Image (cartoon, rainbow, N blue to C red):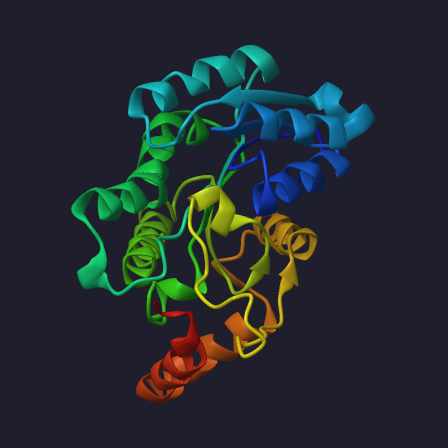
Length: 267
């Protein structure tokens, strides 16, 4: 879909990949409604937008709050007149521990943001998107949504749910004007650990594994380009691309490789 003068709702727009998606869309002539739980984060995005901030509206809301999300379409349409695309970027990780060491509230929190947050925004905006002559939905899953990462089992499960939800929507909306894309980022240089309220055990150690990280700017570009092309799926980073292929060819080998690399991060 064309970006110029279209209206894009971006969750997680106050930091990391979401912020870069917002700035990328603005730079290409889009109008953006950025949604985030952090007022300060949204203010930072608006400041970085500079002169393009005239095409930006900011909306403080938790995607896990169904009532708050249900009110967003009215606010976005009041600000921009329409809604042409929804990009679900907001997400959190769990603390780096095995499944057995997570409490039920911790598990529920991850699913509330990563899965139910996507469900909430889809329920709110899909009725508007299907009425547009051209529209798009982009849901950000994760490399952890197709390969297990020890210490992130619940995070991976939530992102796997996003993967299949998005693929199901793609099938259901094939005969509509809405194009649906699922995105699988690998290791991205963002502050998702801090935003999630967790730390990586051993990450400051000299023995900790060093992973090649894709920048948030690069990730934002991949996401926007995939949406513009109406791509079915997109991977971000050489790690995600390699493991996507290896998981199809030798799933147990791929699992073992990741488990060995992540062993030092498990508490």
